[in-house]
Image (cartoon, rainbow, N blue to C red; front, side):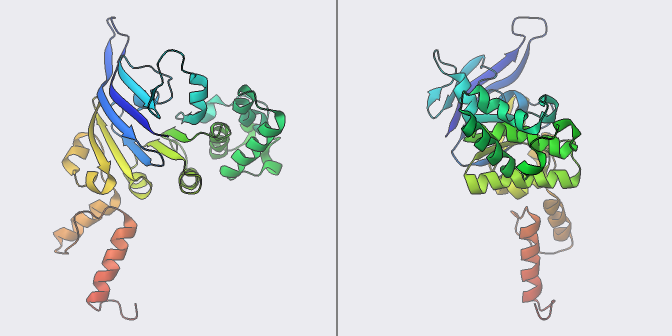
Length: 290
């Protein structure tokens, strides 16, 4: 399922004294099966953009196409669209409301009008995707869980509708390191094992470097850069201008080059840097027995 934005602009409070242009002439295509990171400083338009992807917001100008069809055209079934393009808001656990985990996850499939057997199967599959035992947690109150567990329940509620595209707005915000790693691992598994297209808003350049195949940088409601992470991370001046940093591995590479070590310009992950340094040490005989 591909998504294309064609010259999309969006204005909040148009025609009023509070008018503000949040998006300006956005042209963007996200192909089926991609893992895309959407990055930029707070207020650059990221959250506004992702809310256009499943029709929650309609562009002031331009078109949003899903599989070549304008999702805002007359007669389009937006409810069905939102089942295929799932959106997980920042702090989604604040939207939990049912008395049990099972009922909360079942809410979306039940609104789809599915038979109870199918709803039950979807709940179990969704809980499995987020690494939560049905037998242990299904009848628990979501409000008795930890923050990380509550977030996994909220994500499971979106997954139970079995979307082809999953859009996540800062999915690890506010979590401790263990909770962050678990959420990111779940997202990666969905992408690799289920071929779900992932669009993730993130401020963490290390997460982006480790997980995404493509990076989109936004500034002032426009796309300032888009391309493979390896290319975008070489645009350090632009990233700084956008209020972003670079991965820790890139910073370490800069320091090592200052010490005279010859390293490729496009190294950007810790794994790549480790492998390259190990290769250099082996070539120079610095690590005997390796």
